[in-house]
Structures are given as structure tokens and as C-alpha cells.
Image 1 (cartoon, rainbow, N blue to C red):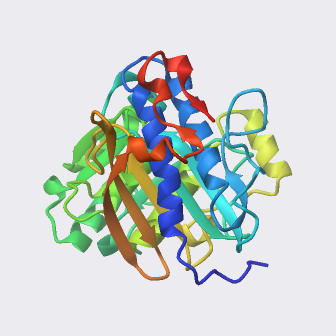
Image 2 (cartoon, helix red, strand yellow):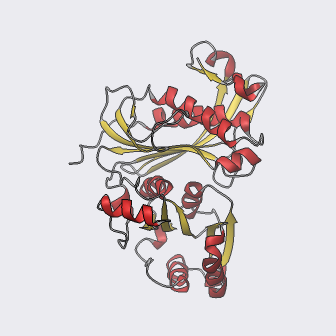
Length: 341
């Protein structure tokens, strides 16, 4: 049974978590070490999330606990004094983007009442379609690609040739891309980071009308949380990549032919989604470092109120040094100097 949704707005507490992860990992932009950047973000996120007034459990994390620094599935988070919550995290959505200094790497977190989030741990990939508020309810995941695009074009008042579809640049999408182009629409490739891409599809003025293709299932749940807050829609179907995954999914009682709706993935009307930019991108500005300050750009949303906040923050390193549990100076030199104090 899903616990009663909290009335207290946790948004500002949660955006502090993504800000910390972004500021820590930002020192790794363009260094070519996605593992190091991800570890820095995880450590900072873990330190800050422990201060949030909630009794949370990570439903969407980074797999089973091992020796690597990660927020793992099943980990208890928060200060244990607040409401019971499911938590989904991706300290760096787009680790390759971070390592290469490419656009649209972000740090994200989503929170919902306990029991609300779909557990996709048995299957790593999902076939997805994401659209914005104007196109909710018009897309059929079983329809041909051209029909999906036509439906979105009609809902948004556009000509098909003016519709832009964002797609992960992967060999598996060769036929999908051919079908999109045959329909007359534009393809916009991204190398990584399909949470940010789904948010763009639901953001007015982004130039993106929909997302299509196979991407990570955990990212699909996080994107569903974001679209719940933004009024958009995500549809998905599990896409096992091997016989082992198929067997594991069936053992877990998952329906491989089921079209999962936004509500199936995050079943609550009180969902939080926060993101902070790491590298510059279409959705958010990246982390900017000054002589003794750091500037961040974040998105903070809550579905219950329908509020979407764009937050520009200037962080004083001189003052943070006096009390923060995170050492934001450590990565300014050698990468391995970053630490949580």
C-alpha cells in the first residue's frame, strides 16, 4: 500500500542534493574519466541526501552494492525522521558526456511516496516514447513510427516535417531513424543522457517534440517522475537484451508485452524531480567555477503543486568551507584529491 504523500515540500532540500553532486563532478568535465566523475558525484550526493527530512529507500540506484562508491538499490537514505519515500537517483546522467566535456550531463533525483516507483531491476532496457503535455494520450507505442509522429504533430499543431524526435545514437536505432526520416520528421541524435532528453520533450520552447527508442529502464522511471511533474507522458515496454534477462523478468513476474504508462512507472500524484546541470546543455547551464564561488543552474518540480522552478544559485566556497560535509575544493587539483570530509 502506498503511504500518504507528504505535505512538506522537500524540493529545496532535494535540489541541494543535486547541486552538491554537480559541483563535485564538475571538476571532472573533459578529463576522460567517467568513473572518477561519477564517484565524486555519488559521494557528494550521499553526504547531502543524508540530511533530507525523509525515511527513504533507493529504488532506482546503481545496482547491487559492491566496492564501488554508489547509491545502491535498497540503500536507506535521508535522516529517517520524515515521510516514507521511494528515491530514484542518477548522480551523473551522462557520464560519457561528462568525461568528454559534451553538453547535457546532469545530476538528477526523484522522490515519491513509498511503494510508488516501479522496480525495473530485472531488465536493463526499455523501449520508450516521451512527449509533452499537448500530446498526452495521443501516442500508441504499438503504432508505426510514422503514425506516432503524425499524432504528435496534430496534437501540437505542427506539420510533420517540423516535428523533431530525439534519439540515442546507437546502432540498434538504425531502423527507427530510417522510419523517422521516411515520415518526414527531423532526427536529433544524443550520445548519452536520455533523462534530460525526455525532459526536453516536455519542455516548451526546447525544439524537441518527442523522444523515441530503447534506453535504460532505470532512466525510464526517473524520466517518468520528471514527466509526472511537467505534465508530459512516458510510455515504455521492457526490452530484455538476452535470454537471461528474459528469464529473470519472468521470474520476477514482469509482463514483457505490457505497455507501461507514466502512472505504472511512478504511481503517485505527489512526485518530486530535481536536476542540476553539470555540463552546459539545452536543458540547464553547467557548473561554472569562479575564484571563490560556484554557480549552478537547476530545475525543481513537484507534481502535487504543478510548480516548476528554475533556480540560479551562487555558492560561496569561503562560507561552505566553514560547515559543509562536502569538500568542494578537493577536485580543483588532482582528480583523486576529491573527498567527503
